[in-house]
Image 1 (cartoon, rainbow, N blue to C red):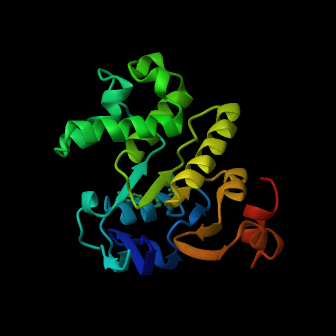
Image 2 (cartoon, protein in one colour):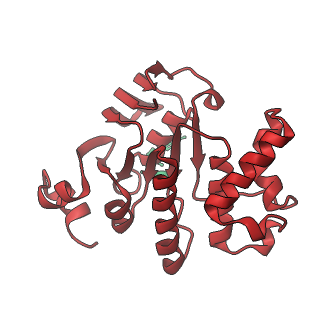
Length: 238
Ligand code: ADP
Ligand code: MG
């Protein structure tokens, strides 16, 4: 089980409170999308779940275990960022296996996981290439592959497609939807792209200045926005 539960989560940087008491309940296997304007705290919230940022107050549980003070590597999560720095001197295969090798996993288990991930992402023909010989979309697939091999309970994506051109973004959006269907893992996905949110999400969380404005299925939010802010974000093109 990988239910993710946030209770009264707050975050301050110095005197400035950025996340102002967020309550959220995410079920195992759910695809949840955080949307909201730039600076509203989407990345900060994700980084707290990942353990890359301390939680000022409140409680985070994953699979029923309190995670506030648990090391990032022991939370059963894997994160994919917007800037997917691959190791330039390593092949795709080496890039995908590196974290596992670093963690001391057996060679044949690493090979098996890398091959499985490569199959899912259709990276097979590219495994011996270096990153500079890949397109932007292929690189992003390798970055997702690096997350898959860790076999996480929860995937965290922070605007993973925003560096790609429009056509590739559409393609990768389909890939990510397929990935969720295949792996059935919990996914928490940050985007400011309304179309991504509407098409990928089981549930959308609309954030505004560190506060959850509304949570609901895409069409619920579209049809019944709580206020003009939500309507502006979900209801109409912007
Ligand atoms: P989003 O991802 O929604 O664009 P962020 O979570 O990155 O927003 O940032 C939310 C707010 O917190 C912004 O005002 C940002 O400047 C501030 N912030 C983020 N990280 C830090 C930090 N390490 N120190 C101080 N302020 C920060
Ligand atoms: Mg951000």
